[in-house]
Image 1 (tube, one colour):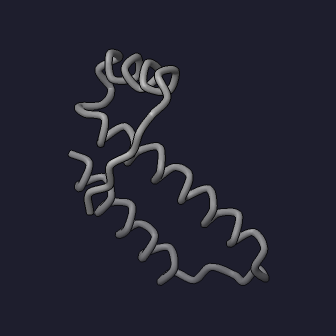
Image 2 (tube, helix red, strand yellow; image 1 turned 90 degrees about the vertical axis):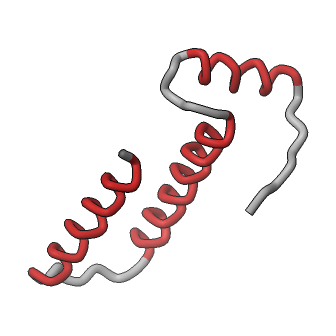
Length: 75
């Protein structure tokens, strides 16, 4: 999906500084990383509101698999 947004000059300069650090290859990479972080924080918050249940071996295996997939996508 492509979305075009206008940034204030202050925010644009902030993004430029982040890009200048070399940590991100493009503005899209930076914005995706920030939005992903925000999305994950929302998911964690939702999970904390749900009733707790013990984790099974399958739960841990699934979490490990998803983490490994996520790491591979970032490489």
